[in-house]
Length: 111
Length: 115
Image 1 (cartoon, rainbow over the protein chains, first blue to last red):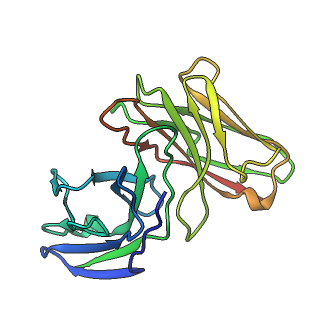
Image 2 (cartoon, each protein chain N blue to C red):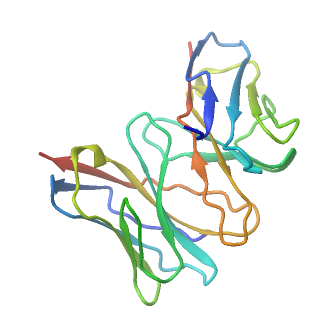
Protein backbone atom coordinates (compact mmCIF):
# COMPACT_ATOMS: atom_id res chain seq x y z
CA UNK A 1 0.00 0.00 0.00
CA UNK A 2 1.15 3.53 -0.78
CA UNK A 3 2.50 5.69 2.00
CA UNK A 4 0.78 8.87 3.09
CA UNK A 5 2.04 12.11 4.56
CA UNK A 6 -0.02 14.16 6.99
CA UNK A 7 0.80 17.14 9.20
CA UNK A 8 1.32 15.99 12.78
CA UNK A 9 -1.13 18.44 14.29
CA UNK A 10 -3.73 21.08 13.47
CA UNK A 11 -6.04 23.37 15.38
CA UNK A 12 -9.52 24.45 14.33
CA UNK A 13 -12.00 26.83 15.92
CA UNK A 14 -15.28 25.31 16.98
CA UNK A 15 -17.96 25.82 14.34
CA UNK A 16 -15.47 26.38 11.56
CA UNK A 17 -14.58 23.95 8.81
CA UNK A 18 -11.61 21.69 9.50
CA UNK A 19 -9.57 20.86 6.40
CA UNK A 20 -7.15 17.99 6.90
CA UNK A 21 -4.67 17.42 4.07
CA UNK A 22 -3.03 14.20 3.01
CA UNK A 23 -0.35 13.53 0.40
CA UNK A 24 -0.22 10.15 -1.31
CA UNK A 25 1.94 10.82 -4.35
CA UNK A 26 2.70 7.13 -5.00
CA UNK A 27 -0.90 5.97 -5.00
CA UNK A 28 -1.75 3.29 -7.55
CA UNK A 29 -4.77 3.28 -9.81
CA UNK A 30 -6.54 0.58 -7.83
CA UNK A 31 -5.96 2.11 -4.40
CA UNK A 32 -8.70 3.91 -2.52
CA UNK A 33 -8.20 6.76 -0.04
CA UNK A 34 -9.65 5.98 3.39
CA UNK A 35 -10.01 8.22 6.40
CA UNK A 36 -10.38 7.05 9.97
CA UNK A 37 -10.26 8.92 13.22
CA UNK A 38 -9.43 7.83 16.73
CA UNK A 39 -10.75 9.62 19.73
CA UNK A 40 -8.63 9.14 22.84
CA UNK A 41 -8.66 5.55 24.15
CA UNK A 42 -11.24 4.36 21.62
CA UNK A 43 -10.97 2.19 18.53
CA UNK A 44 -10.54 3.83 15.12
CA UNK A 45 -13.76 5.07 13.57
CA UNK A 46 -14.36 4.87 9.83
CA UNK A 47 -15.18 8.25 8.31
CA UNK A 48 -15.20 8.09 4.53
CA UNK A 49 -13.40 6.70 1.51
CA UNK A 50 -13.11 7.37 -2.20
CA UNK A 51 -11.33 6.37 -5.37
CA UNK A 52 -11.22 9.45 -7.58
CA UNK A 53 -14.50 11.28 -7.23
CA UNK A 54 -15.26 13.59 -4.36
CA UNK A 55 -17.39 11.95 -1.70
CA UNK A 56 -19.69 13.26 1.01
CA UNK A 57 -21.50 11.57 3.85
CA UNK A 58 -23.08 12.63 7.11
CA UNK A 59 -19.71 12.96 8.80
CA UNK A 60 -17.44 14.62 6.26
CA UNK A 61 -16.47 15.38 2.69
CA UNK A 62 -13.49 13.96 0.85
CA UNK A 63 -11.88 15.96 -1.91
CA UNK A 64 -9.39 14.06 -4.10
CA UNK A 65 -7.25 15.96 -6.57
CA UNK A 66 -7.52 15.07 -10.23
CA UNK A 67 -4.08 13.45 -10.27
CA UNK A 68 -5.05 11.58 -7.06
CA UNK A 69 -1.77 12.47 -5.41
CA UNK A 70 -3.41 14.29 -2.54
CA UNK A 71 -6.72 14.61 -0.77
CA UNK A 72 -8.44 16.73 1.85
CA UNK A 73 -10.88 15.63 4.51
CA UNK A 74 -13.35 18.35 5.38
CA UNK A 75 -15.36 18.47 8.58
CA UNK A 76 -17.80 21.26 7.72
CA UNK A 77 -18.63 22.47 11.22
CA UNK A 78 -16.11 21.19 13.71
CA UNK A 79 -17.25 20.50 17.26
CA UNK A 80 -15.26 19.73 20.38
CA UNK A 81 -16.15 16.05 19.89
CA UNK A 82 -14.20 16.07 16.63
CA UNK A 83 -10.94 16.41 18.57
CA UNK A 84 -9.09 13.23 17.59
CA UNK A 85 -6.24 11.76 15.59
CA UNK A 86 -7.18 11.51 11.92
CA UNK A 87 -5.57 8.88 9.74
CA UNK A 88 -5.37 8.97 5.96
CA UNK A 89 -4.77 5.53 4.48
CA UNK A 90 -4.55 4.26 0.93
CA UNK A 91 -5.36 0.64 0.24
CA UNK A 92 -6.36 -1.79 -2.42
CA UNK A 93 -9.82 -3.21 -1.84
CA UNK A 94 -9.19 -6.71 -3.10
CA UNK A 95 -7.57 -9.53 -1.23
CA UNK A 96 -6.49 -9.19 2.38
CA UNK A 97 -5.90 -5.45 2.12
CA UNK A 98 -5.45 -4.69 5.76
CA UNK A 99 -4.94 -1.09 6.85
CA UNK A 100 -1.50 0.40 7.39
CA UNK A 101 -1.77 3.32 9.79
CA UNK A 102 0.78 6.10 9.95
CA UNK A 103 0.94 8.61 12.79
CA UNK A 104 -1.98 10.71 11.54
CA UNK A 105 -2.92 14.30 12.26
CA UNK A 106 -3.94 15.29 15.76
CA UNK A 107 -6.82 17.73 15.32
CA UNK A 108 -7.67 19.92 18.27
CA UNK A 109 -10.94 21.82 18.11
CA UNK A 110 -10.72 24.96 20.17
CA UNK A 111 -13.78 26.51 21.86
CA UNK B 1 -25.66 -1.62 18.54
CA UNK B 2 -24.29 -4.45 16.40
CA UNK B 3 -20.72 -3.23 16.05
CA UNK B 4 -17.54 -5.17 16.74
CA UNK B 5 -17.50 -6.29 20.36
CA UNK B 6 -14.37 -6.99 22.38
CA UNK B 7 -13.95 -8.54 25.81
CA UNK B 8 -12.51 -7.78 28.27
CA UNK B 9 -12.04 -4.08 27.74
CA UNK B 10 -9.27 -3.91 30.31
CA UNK B 11 -6.93 -6.55 31.66
CA UNK B 12 -4.11 -6.25 34.16
CA UNK B 13 -1.90 -9.29 34.45
CA UNK B 14 1.39 -10.27 35.99
CA UNK B 15 4.35 -10.94 33.78
CA UNK B 16 4.47 -14.57 32.76
CA UNK B 17 0.72 -15.15 32.89
CA UNK B 18 -1.41 -16.02 29.89
CA UNK B 19 -4.25 -13.79 28.71
CA UNK B 20 -6.99 -14.27 26.17
CA UNK B 21 -9.08 -11.67 24.39
CA UNK B 22 -12.33 -12.33 22.59
CA UNK B 23 -13.74 -10.55 19.57
CA UNK B 24 -17.24 -10.81 18.14
CA UNK B 25 -17.33 -9.26 14.66
CA UNK B 26 -20.23 -7.57 12.97
CA UNK B 27 -22.76 -10.20 11.97
CA UNK B 28 -22.05 -11.78 8.58
CA UNK B 29 -18.66 -10.11 8.23
CA UNK B 30 -16.44 -12.91 7.03
CA UNK B 31 -13.16 -11.05 7.46
CA UNK B 32 -11.69 -10.46 10.87
CA UNK B 33 -8.50 -8.59 11.81
CA UNK B 34 -6.39 -8.11 14.92
CA UNK B 35 -4.26 -5.01 15.45
CA UNK B 36 -2.08 -3.80 18.29
CA UNK B 37 -1.61 -0.20 19.32
CA UNK B 38 0.94 1.22 21.75
CA UNK B 39 0.86 4.70 23.19
CA UNK B 40 1.53 7.42 20.66
CA UNK B 41 1.54 5.06 17.69
CA UNK B 42 -1.02 4.12 15.09
CA UNK B 43 -2.52 0.62 15.10
CA UNK B 44 -0.27 -2.12 13.73
CA UNK B 45 -1.61 -5.13 11.86
CA UNK B 46 -1.19 -8.51 13.56
CA UNK B 47 -3.26 -11.06 11.71
CA UNK B 48 -6.26 -11.60 9.46
CA UNK B 49 -8.92 -14.29 9.03
CA UNK B 50 -11.26 -14.99 6.20
CA UNK B 51 -13.98 -17.15 7.71
CA UNK B 52 -12.08 -19.67 9.86
CA UNK B 53 -8.86 -19.53 7.84
CA UNK B 54 -5.98 -17.46 9.14
CA UNK B 55 -4.59 -16.07 5.90
CA UNK B 56 -1.97 -13.59 6.98
CA UNK B 57 0.22 -13.02 10.03
CA UNK B 58 2.49 -10.09 10.72
CA UNK B 59 6.07 -10.54 11.88
CA UNK B 60 4.87 -8.77 15.03
CA UNK B 61 2.95 -11.92 15.93
CA UNK B 62 5.58 -13.81 17.90
CA UNK B 63 5.33 -17.47 18.86
CA UNK B 64 3.73 -16.44 22.16
CA UNK B 65 0.73 -15.08 20.29
CA UNK B 66 -1.96 -17.27 18.82
CA UNK B 67 -5.25 -16.33 17.23
CA UNK B 68 -8.15 -18.55 16.34
CA UNK B 69 -11.51 -18.26 14.69
CA UNK B 70 -12.82 -21.78 15.01
CA UNK B 71 -16.25 -21.47 13.43
CA UNK B 72 -15.73 -18.40 11.33
CA UNK B 73 -17.60 -16.22 13.79
CA UNK B 74 -15.94 -14.98 16.99
CA UNK B 75 -12.17 -14.95 17.39
CA UNK B 76 -9.75 -15.22 20.29
CA UNK B 77 -6.27 -13.81 20.67
CA UNK B 78 -4.13 -15.51 23.30
CA UNK B 79 -0.84 -14.22 24.60
CA UNK B 80 1.26 -16.74 26.51
CA UNK B 81 3.95 -15.88 29.05
CA UNK B 82 3.16 -12.18 28.86
CA UNK B 83 5.97 -9.64 28.93
CA UNK B 84 5.85 -5.98 29.85
CA UNK B 85 6.35 -5.12 26.20
CA UNK B 86 3.00 -6.72 25.45
CA UNK B 87 1.24 -3.87 27.22
CA UNK B 88 -0.89 -2.26 24.54
CA UNK B 89 -4.41 -1.94 23.22
CA UNK B 90 -5.48 -4.90 21.14
CA UNK B 91 -7.98 -3.99 18.47
CA UNK B 92 -10.28 -6.29 16.59
CA UNK B 93 -11.92 -5.30 13.33
CA UNK B 94 -14.14 -6.90 10.74
CA UNK B 95 -15.24 -6.33 7.18
CA UNK B 96 -17.60 -7.87 4.68
CA UNK B 97 -16.43 -9.27 1.41
CA UNK B 98 -18.20 -7.45 -1.38
CA UNK B 99 -17.27 -6.51 -4.89
CA UNK B 100 -17.76 -2.82 -4.15
CA UNK B 101 -15.27 -2.64 -1.32
CA UNK B 102 -14.78 -3.92 2.17
CA UNK B 103 -14.59 -1.15 4.70
CA UNK B 104 -13.01 -2.28 7.94
CA UNK B 105 -14.83 -1.49 11.18
CA UNK B 106 -13.09 -1.56 14.54
CA UNK B 107 -14.12 -2.47 18.03
CA UNK B 108 -13.32 -0.37 21.09
CA UNK B 109 -10.22 -2.36 21.89
CA UNK B 110 -8.93 -4.40 24.81
CA UNK B 111 -6.33 -2.71 26.98
CA UNK B 112 -3.61 -4.96 28.37
CA UNK B 113 -1.29 -3.91 31.16
CA UNK B 114 1.46 -6.33 32.14
CA UNK B 115 2.97 -5.61 35.55
